[in-house]
Image (cartoon, rainbow, N blue to C red; front, top):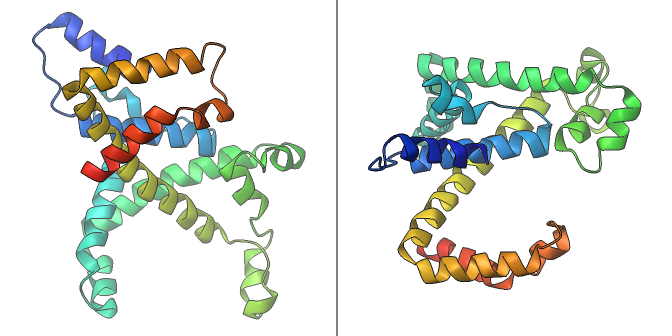
Length: 224
């Protein structure tokens, strides 16, 4: 709703306004959703319109992914050297680590009982519940005797989740919006299905029953 309100505000102010950054905005939306669902944390990626500033986390994730893709075809030892001497990569990792440490700290402020209760439905609670109590002690143990995850491993898991999810989901969402704008008949059928199936709210079972929408998404993925 927040993103749609921002788009409507632009067109209300200028009926001829053309959105040229749909992909960026969809990636912002994906990050915001992942932040709330996975981490119970506001990554503030949808505030770009109101602040006229690019979100630091999204920029850092974008830089991280671009640099990572550059290193894929080169030998491992060269990629490690490249990453160590790249100021752009170091800056991106500092920014990302700052955000992820804030997410971890927010979760750690909760009581152990709250974390245990949330483990089944929250990624961050599950990871924090597995966090090692004494990293130095665990580090000297044989590999087969180690228990839990180190803070570095938790950060790596969160980073993988954000990079892998936001880029792909945001891209698919942007393609979906574009293709729906070109196919109003399909758009109307999706709206009709949603209106019919979600009259009393949206549940997991109802999402599974949205057959036409599922077919459309599969077609978007095929064309993408």
